[in-house]
Image 1 (cartoon, helix red, strand yellow):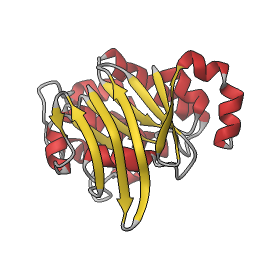
Image 2: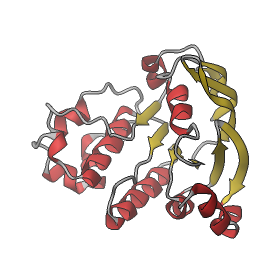
Image 3: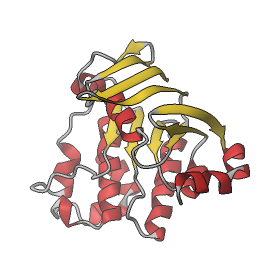
Length: 230
């Protein structure tokens, strides 16, 4: 579904990505792992078209994304859940869900969303920012599912969540996969990543240095945890 080749990126004069390469196939969950500052968020922001100072090939189902603006990329079926969740503070949960345009007939309708995320149904009339951290994460993910995204870019969805909510995020991701959607996940929690993902890419200093199966991650868990500073 997505192929990234030789992705480089800059912030002004400072180069932060020096060659990111990865492949994601339909229905896979793939994680980017690496220390803070390694370039993981810049990678997904580059794919989404938000970070424009970049060079390389970004091919989604045969379409080159490199020069496209974010709104065009979203209409191709790419949904982005940023690390701060991007909930609109002046809107209710229901309004947050229905504001973005539906870009595909495969988008989840509200009944399906509320069945999958019961807390959102119960709090539909409340301001989105009054939700707990875990509920805001549900809302952010549900919003891109309603749009009809076929590729979800998730940036640190478990950050700052209690263990019970981390498990709930894992259940959500497995449900997404059961619906044959595809996910690129930025994740610091290695033990969580192996419970949901099919494959992993290790990013070091803005470069892909290893492509790892779940079996390799589990076998080298202690080494990787020490490397990540966990």
